[in-house]
Structure formats: structure tokens, C-alpha cells
Image (tube, rainbow, N blue to C red):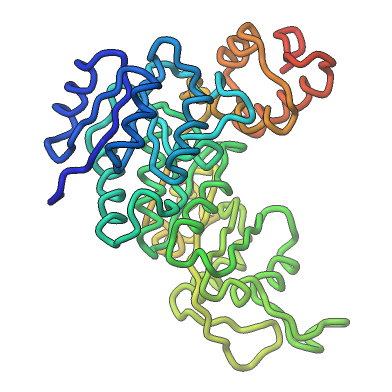
Amino acid sequence: MDEKLKTLYLSARKTDADRFLQETGDFLHIIHAASRRALEKNLKTDSPDVVFLDVDVPNQYFPETMRKIRTLRKNIPVYVLTRETDFFFQLPPNAPPPDAVFPFPPERDVIREKLAAVQKRNQDGSGADAPAAEDFSVPGCYPEGISPAAVKLRRELRQAAETDFNVLLLGETGCGKERAAGAIHFHSARKQHPFRAQNVSTLPESIIDSLLFGTTKGCYTGAGDREGLFEQCAGGTLFLDEIGEMDVCLQPKLLRVLEEREVYRLGAKTPVKTDFRLICATNRDLQESVHCRTFRADLLYRLDILRIEIPPLRERPEDIPAFLSGLLKKTGKTVSLDALDKLSEYDWPGNIRQLQNCVARAACKTQEEEISADAIVF
């Protein structure tokens, strides 16, 4: 980084700002503010490039601080540093969200990456008041949370989005594999083109065959000329869930599409060229499936280029408040601390999907604004 970034840092102790500078690097010019009033003054007079907020500052109501920042500098990047794992849970539904949230002390490389992006916007002439690109760390985006597992997953999804290789997502049922695929697509160079998702285990072979490859008129009774998903995703991304359940008879056809980048519609004699990115997901051990001869080894080699494992919810209970934040905004409810403890202590065999259903059920049963622990039924 050639030029120092003006970094407005709100914290009760200047030693925190000094420590942040020491751990992050000497490419920052730190402007320390010990109170919200000082922060507002610095925003007006010092033209900072980025703001870091320590939410532990006494007498600071965070939503009001965010509103003031957005009023004075609508699009300046605002990053939060917190020692609390339930930060998202504490936010009221109408609170303006920060651009990212980091545990304190933050990872040096992650912070440097954020600040490099800010500096690039400045060098491009857009500056801190230009709209920032959507970020993997924005509350409500995927993956939510501030656990080490969530931070690692964000990094891996971002790296995958910057390439065009096939991706294999591994994870238990309900852990959010389709959302991960969508996150990769919508942060990639293909984001302006279609994203399609299909679970290959839910339909019989003949239906999946026509869905993927398309049909020509007369190839079977009532069939017309229709594009399959491979063609529909031209320029975009196709997500195939439960790929381990794909019929063995279809696997060679998928392999050929990946090798030749062309498809034959059912009944067609000439192929159609197509360009799409493939992301697949499974909760199976595909190596074991290869051993059992229910999955082709050569297809697995084609799919397993970038492998991303999505951790189950039981391994990151500190992220539950972040998941609840988005869900509770839809219901207008809050969750009591006892209820939050109960949710955090459960092992969630159905992962995020089960959590969402559990909280939605409790919200429907609760007449009061706050969901109690008694309303949580697993």
C-alpha cells in the first residue's frame, strides 16, 4: 500500500488504537476518537477513508452511532470490532448494518485485505463515498457469523469466486450448501448471468435427463424444443445438489459435457456449445461411493477441483445470533437470553434449516414480542 489510509478509530482507550496500528501495519494513519461526539467532529473535519468502531465504548448506542455516520458520510466503509459473540443478536431490526464485523483482535491478513480494497477504490477515483461492492461479511449475507469457522468459510468462498474452476461443496444436510453456491456465483465474474439450482436426487432419471439436457420436438410424446439447464446457464453458474445421488447412467453424460463443453438435447443429432460454471454439493463420502462403484472416479476428478467443507452448526454455536438476526427481522420478534442459551446448547442435527424452522415455529406460537426459552421446542 503506497499511501496511508486515514482511519478513524473509535475506542475508549487510545492504547487500543495503538495496538490496532501495531498489529495491522504502518500503512494506516490513525485518527483516534474517544467518544461519539469526537467521532462526528472527525468525520466532518478530517475526511477519513474508513471507520473502525469498538462497540465496547461506554455510553455509545451503536445503532445511533451508525445512523450518524451514514448521515454524514453515506458510503464510507464502517467496520466493527467486538469482543462479544452475540453482537448481531444485540442489534435491533432497524439498525443500519456495518460493512463487516470482526472479533477483537482481528486477523491481520483479513483487515489488510479489506483496507486494500478501500485503497483501490480511492485510487480508481471513486473514494470512500462510492458505493462499496457487496461483501461476504455484510450482515445478512452468506455466511453469517464471526466464528473462526465462518471467517475461514468466507475466505474460501471469496477465493472460489475469483476463479472459474468447478467447485465441490461438502457438508451435512441443512448446512447451507445452496447459499454457499449462490455466494460464489454472485461474487464472481459470472454474476450478471443466470444462476440455476437443481437437486438431482428428487426426480427420476428420465426427468433429470430432460431437465439438464433439454428436448427436441417429437423426442417423446408431447415434447417440444426446450433448453435444458446446461443451456439456460450459458455464461452463468449451474448448482447441482446431492450430486452423489446422481444415477450412474447419467454420470457419463455429465462427464462428456464437462469435457467437451457441448450438449445434445434429447433427440438431437447436433450438439449445442455452452459455457457455464459447475458447482456441486453432497453430504456423501464420494470416495467411498467410487469404491462401491456407485460414482465414477473420472467424474469425481472433474468435479473435485476446488473443495470447500461447510462446517455444521454445532461446531460454531457462537454464530447462532447472526443467523437469528436475519430471521427475527422477518418476524418482528426478539429472543430472550435464556432462549438464546437454549438454542446455543443444542447440537442441531438438521443444521441451519432446523434452526430456522425451530425459531419460526416459536415465533408463530409466541404472542409477546420476546420469544422465551419455553417456546423453543426441538
